[in-house]
Length: 182
Image 1 (cartoon, rainbow, N blue to C red):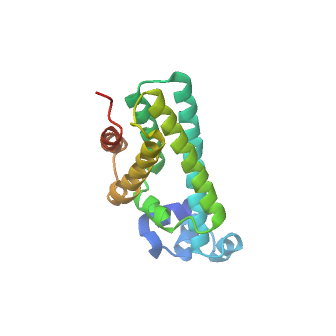
Image 2: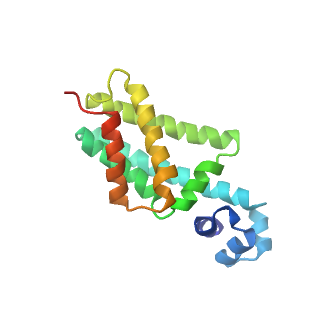
Image 3: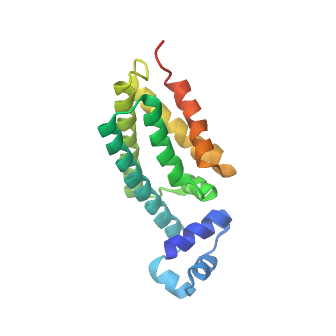
């Protein structure tokens, strides 16, 4: 309840959000909020942890299906991008804030890095499977992941986005960085 309220208030107000407004949104007293979270940055960290868990869960399911079904490259990347965009839909300002403010400690950084590594590995697998990505598929995979991440968190999130339009925009980046042979 508090984490949901924090996500809503941070999404609307950014870092100007206060613990009083978050507690009010949750329908709790400020004292109750402080029993669970020492400050607003701890709340922001909890929102970020939930976001990473949600993204991990969604992408794990998508990657498992893609390994089983092995669709063509465009369909593969649309499925991956669609999942990534969907996890970020409706909270552009919040996700931009999370991207800049968190992770704050080594444990959080390791969790995010582990997720990124799994994404790199899966994208590289599908680049190889579909004969895309050039001579250095791992470098292409890392470049793709970071380019999509930057577009999503720094460009598209500024004004909000439609899931379909954002996926199309990101596919242009994918096609430019990993064109088909020929």
